[in-house]
Image 1 (cartoon, rainbow, N blue to C red):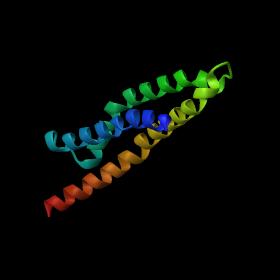
Image 2 (cartoon, helix red, strand yellow; image 1 turned 45 degrees about the horizontal axis):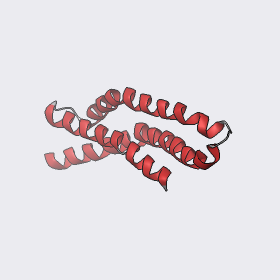
Image 3 (cartoon, rainbow, N blue to C red; image 1 turned 45 degrees about the vertical axis):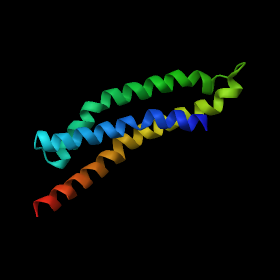
Image 4 (tube, helix red, strand yellow; image 1 turned 90 degrees about the vertical axis):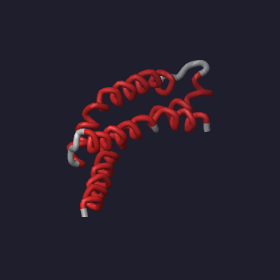
Length: 112
């Protein structure tokens, strides 16, 4: 349970920031949905990659190297490590497609 709580606190920020940036790109800069999402992902790609890689490399010794004291926290490390990796992949692949679809549907609906 502790691993899931840690994971929830760390992975919810990136998708929120991508969606917020895409929506503000459509409103402020008057971009279409796909261009707004592409710009939002381009801006957030480096911070997402940096936080994901630092977390993965920081947890790798706990997860992969057996030693005294690692038995207790190895489960937490595995959950957080692979959860962050999976969340980063979903954030950079499925979220932009879903966001572009919803924003384009919403803009088509409001122009009718």
